[in-house]
Image (cartoon, rainbow, N blue to C red; front, side, top):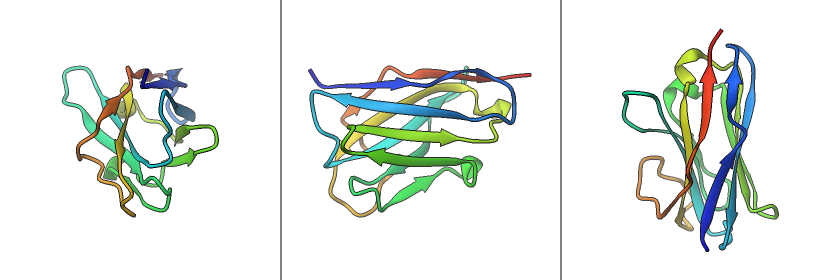
Length: 125
């Protein structure tokens, strides 16, 4: 069964860090680009970051540049999103998604084939 499972969310105060994980089962992430998305209450889902299958290409939405870092460990079949200096506006349900792609660059808001169920991140004082 093909599955993506996110973990690592939680309730934190502004300024702290969280690391989200996206673990794949039922398939290998080696040839898949991965995207991270979030959806805040009452808002549309937005792309946060993506990473190419090789890891050489990454992209970030402007609001998280310099604070978030995406990485992947193909041995562990897992992609990570390190989130530093969290702000209240980072609150939302964070999803990861995968698409088969050997392109050097990822497309953050492109088509994705597999989606996880999400992990909740809440940033509040």
